[in-house]
Length: 80
Image (cartoon, rainbow, N blue to C red; front, side, top):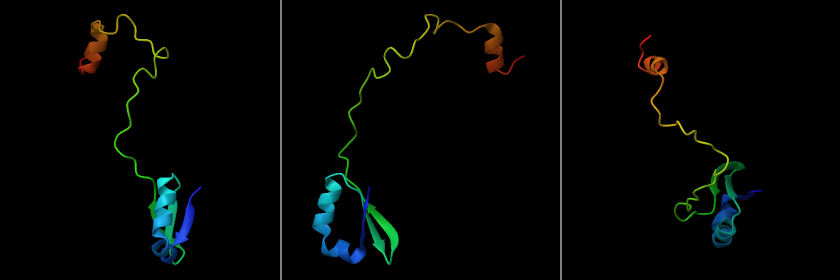
């Protein structure tokens, strides 16, 4: 759940609010009761890719790279 602070409080307690965001909490900054900005934690760089996450859940048929049936190929090429 996000914390909502008015802009005056944000200016007064910026360091504390930044610490909250760095800890993973979203902070919404409002001006005259209207939400105008959201402070969120900074993600430093791309996440590490995890390969093999779908292993065992997807099956590639043995004929995957086999030539297409001539009728199917004709349909892709716009021939009837």
